[in-house]
Amino acid sequence: MSINNKKGKKMPDPVTHATSPWLIATLTAAASFLFDLPLGVVITAAGGAYWAVYRNKSLKVGRSILLIIGGMLIAVTLVHGVTWMFENLFGMKDIPQRPVAFILGFAVIDKPCRDALISWIKSKFDFLQVQK
Picture (tube, rainbow, N blue to C red):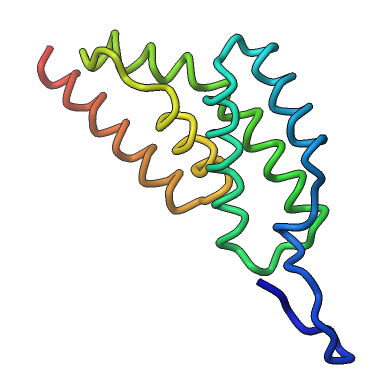
């Protein structure tokens, strides 16, 4: 996908051509090592953050890169806690980490998705309290 500048020349899409592959590979490998997660989970978290940034066309390149990196790091930080919560509090065993990482990466950046997830989890906690 390309866009036209003021002079009518075709320019590459700023989000998709903003980072080089070696930077992405280095960051995902470092996050995988630091958070003790498989590399696929970290890449999926980055994919979720990227998808949220890609949907918002008004962001500049620098801010987009920072949001993707920040969203990925926050998502991989929360993956173990979310899988623990589903296992121990809700009784849902064997939750796959990749979809959880994608949803978390997306929700970190996309406010409506984040609000929907928070309200869903809150309703689950309210249901557990009513059962007790």
